[in-house]
Structure formats: C-alpha cells, structure tokens
Length: 402
Image (tube, rainbow, N blue to C red; front, side, top):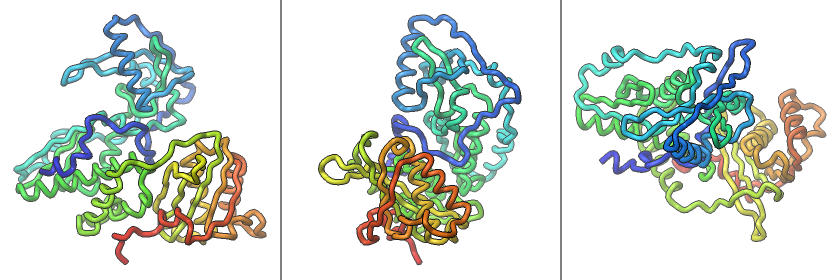
C-alpha cells in the first residue's frame, strides 16, 4: 500500500542530469606535494570492451562523467554485482594513498542492532546507485579522471573505489534522515532499515521515510517547479535539527501540491546560449526567486525557475540587499547559460537600476556588484510588481499558515 502510494520514489533508473548541489558535496583534498597519478590501462577482452562502451555511454548520457583532459588518469576494472552483471570501477589505490583521510564515523553494525530492541516489524530499503546521487565538488572532478580505449573521462558524481566516499555518503544519509534517525530508522551506508513496534506504526513510519525520499526526488527536478522553496517549506522545516517532527495537514497539503506539479508535461523551453536572456527576479521577507526566459519569436518563454528560502541572517537584510541577492543567486545558478550572453534583468524594485550611483554602499553590495560586472554582460530594468512573474516564487505558498 505504501509503495503504491509513493511509486514515484521507486524509479527503474535515476533521473537524467546531475543531483542537486548540496552544502557538503564530496571533496578531495590531497596531501601537500602530491603529484598527479598516471597509470596505464591494461589490455581488455572483447566482452569487457563491449561492457565498457555500454557503461561509459550510459554515464556520459546521464552526466555522471564528462570528457576530461586531466593530468590524473587511472585504469578501470570490472567487479561482479550481487544480482548479476558487472560494475565498472576505477583503480584508485595510488590516488587513495595521497588523499587526506576523512574522520567522519561510520557506525558499527552491532551498535546499530542495539537500536532495534522491542521492534517487531522491519522494512529494508536499498538505494539505487546511491553514490551517483551525490556530486563531486566541481573543482575536484579532474582528480577522479580515468582512461579507457574511448578516451579519458572524469566523474561529476561519487565513484566506487575512491577513499572518503563512504564517509561523505553516510554523512549525507544522516543529514537526510535526521528527523527519523534512531526513532524508526537506522542507516548503514546505502542500506536503510525502518523498524517499528506495531504494524500501524510501521505503516506511518514508512510513509514518513517515503516522504523524505520524495523531497529528495523533487530536488532533482526543482527547476521545473515554480515557487519550489515556498511549496516545500513545510517539508524542509522538518529536516532542521532540533525541530519537533510531526506530519500534519500542512505537510500533507505541501506533499500533494508537489505531486500535482510533477504530473503535467513540462512547458519549459530549451535554452539557446547565443540568444539574449531575460531574467526576472524578486525577493520577499522569506525567499528569493527568479525566472529565466528567452524569446523564440512567440514572446518570452520560460527556460527555468529558481527559488530558495532566506536564512535567518538574510531575512534581516534591507530590501536593497535582498533584491541584489536574488540577482546574485540567479546568475550563479544559471552561470553556464549567462556567462557569455546578453542578459536583461527585470526587477520590481526601481532603485536597483541606479544602485551603483548610490553614495554609500556596504562592502557586501560592492563585492556582489564587482562579481556581476566582472563575469556577466547585463543591464537592470524596472518591472512593476503586479506583472512580475518571479514575485510568485518568493511568496508563502497557499498552505503556509500565519
């Protein structure tokens, strides 16, 4: 029953594209003086080459690896999977010896079992390609490069065989399941065990776990969802440490609204890098939002939506700072589109057009403006709030209570 209700979190394959950026993406820190690792790929059988071509094409199509000119190169090898087939791995042994080791603790199995006392109902969940659901810090991707007959590639997501990857993964799992950890869930790497004392409670616990997974799935497709930050706030608030965990009507309403957003076909257009872009931004007391658009001859069409909640410090910013923060956030998120394009920024805060002419600017605003002017070609124009579609991305959702 629970699986049928939450079938959308049990896909046959991972969604295309990279997982969302997180505060703690995997980082690779080398020992001082470490030199690039260069190892030769040994000869392979024809069946291995066929498997290599298939898996490398899959990883490239998903965006999990990308072509690389890195000075680091290691060979690949295949190991058997438990359920049959072969897993492509990289021989990172030489690289691992010069990586500074993480000290993040991975729990002992016997200690985890102690948490199960009194439980009578259990459900085990195994994540699909769990390591591929966490990014490698972009500045460190080149160190993961591997060599094959079909060229060199580097990972954009975590890979098997790389040291500290289990620690990063377990850290992320603890963060995701923090509201339920040791209450009804124990986690060991990519294995999740849900435990309960009664069948009725077990169904409720499974629903809570499924809802956390659903929120993670939504993060994959957040650019297709207007007002993502506002809609999900009743759910993301449950993930904060020290928050009392209770799934009520507000959370259920947000959950249902997200499911409705995911069911219609997308009406977003594909970006054309050499066409001008229009960026509509807005800020409220709680969030910043933006819409990226282009004109394809039929009027402006949306390319993507973006919004995020403001942290406690940012909520105290004056309006000037919040509006400029919205611009900064949008340009950073869509940097890949906007670096070499002409961009018109539209805001409903009129004085933002003349912010450089203001006699007193705080150091943070100066840094933000320097960043924009150095990296992008843009101009700011005024758009009345009543006609600003980004305005909806920053307002509380209809399910938010006063």
